[in-house]
Image (cartoon, rainbow, N blue to C red; front, side, top):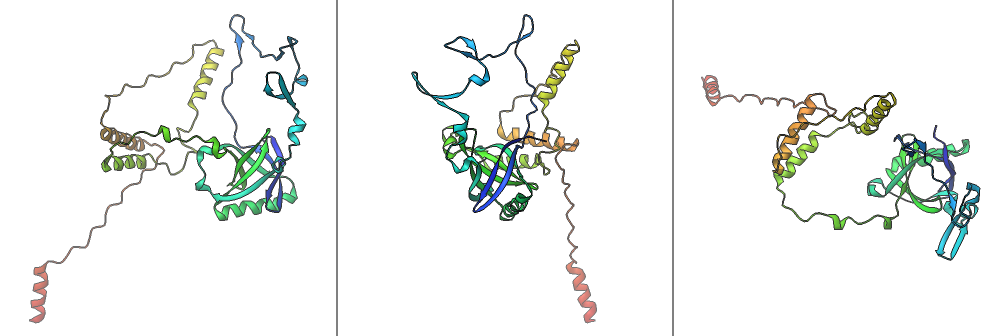
Length: 298
């Protein structure tokens, strides 16, 4: 189980919900150490005092803010913990907003909130169900690691998840990066929509063949091969494309055909067979109607 990274409470109006916070994600990346190539001895980073020119222990190291070259203000961990902020000990809900209004660029690391104790269970479930029924997300403020942050609370299964959010002034405007106006035909847009439809996966990301970290898997093969004294495997050469497609419409059409072919070979996307149209009932000919009238009158 993940370990607790913070404990405190959710402040929901006058309701207080004691909680424990644990990380919602884990990193599976392969990490390397630094070695001296000549003798493969470990290369380490040592902390040295510039004045005494000696290595110092962790107990001798503290935090400080440099106001100028001649003035450094020391700040202790206790002073950081005792900052007079209501959010230092609680995740304070400030407002509720539609989840669709949140800019995904603002969303950062994710955490799971766990009710801390039997007394916290009822208000915790109450908040979770209220978020579910309202279809809204809670915007909160909290103070971790020496700074106050903005947070997003949302429902994740039977639990409440917390996402750290960037402050609005921390998000850069993309206006300068937008391309210049271009001419697009409706046919090109329609073909792009067909391509999107042909690549759509209704089940989401989980379980997809492409939703795997191929780089880490390949790196593990290299490490195991070298550990066994073998040559590391080489990358397979992809087939050269038949030719460079310069026409956008042609590129879209070829992409659609490729996506459809992939589906037919048992790809992840669902193939929806077109149901045959029901034939309209055949209309009686005018001659038959006329003949029937004559027979009736006779």
